[in-house]
Length: 487
Image (cartoon, rainbow, N blue to C red; front, side, top):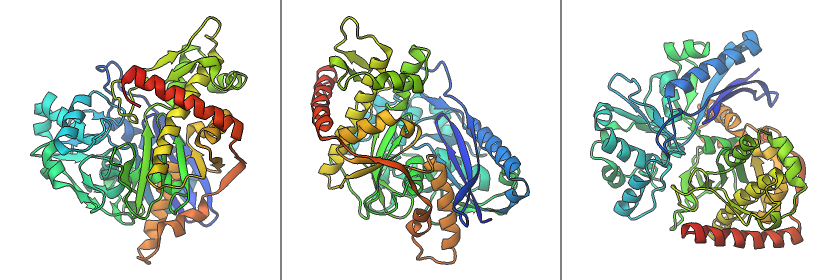
């Protein structure tokens, strides 16, 4: 077997799979769940990096047990990680404090100040505002800091001993020039005068960041010297694992947050800042829409009614489109698009008899979908063609949601065989990097796309329901403006 290990270090847990490129199948998989640190200030969202490392070790142990002697045949490793998180290390490489995550909105004021200083939008979720916040609120910790990394960079460092950052994940920091593929010196200085000296070297896609050192080998139970690819932010890895390595494939990843992205051979920069102009992790670009509230908002309804997604989805399917006039603006965790980091969620139009749990669950589904549809319309306005959307992530299994997306986006919706697209993408990037060592002109798409297979029937939009959803989108947009002054 020709085995490659893909690890996806996420917000809710770490997932790992081992992919055999010869048989084009996943031969082992494992996962380990964890949560955010409890009891923090409003808006704060943090995790201890050590939690991720423990989870990586636990996942590797389970995979090794499943594969037995074949585990030692892993040829290369790829790591995907949640984007934007701030990991700060001291001069000895020790973690200084817990990592502030992509969903942390405690830094909203710092993001506004940076946006004004730079003359462009710097989203609250990006890494830049977290650094300003740290220097301002915890100056002693910032003085101790010698290295600034992103979550997947830190896992790479613990595996190989190398301090490095790759272009795709770096483009979500807020101080990276996506066209030139280098740190933006003016933006770096605007964040903090000391930041430049604390940034790692940059590694391009398709290169190894290093090889397993003694500690990394002990953690994974693999031989020292196994190469580790540059890795990726979770969206960039998901793009590789869902086929967005060539023009024409548009992917919607439905997790705690939701993203919509597509491959682009040239950078696409949105002057409004709604669509992120990321680099991808294959050497191209990945224009991306991100909304902060997706399955996390649905989970809130499940918790409120002490029920589960399958049950509430069945009940929601029997409720009418439009929820009898009830609209949910699901900005429970603030929102990135539109840029409302301190917003709260709302249910509007409630009347006697409408507090049905299935109706409320559907209202959240429709609200999340309406917000995604507004963002996709913006992507179309920037020149992206969206005719078919491939859904991945936890929400992809929800048949009701797939139908809503088809009607709201007025595009065909399909699923794929492997739903853990980020972990698969990490493994496929490792395979590409391994093969590229002998063929420098080898494109990632040539290695990855043959292993990405769609599944099930394609859901086509219904013209009547699509027209009805346009009305719902207008109602949703009107409520957003009335409540928050933005749309």
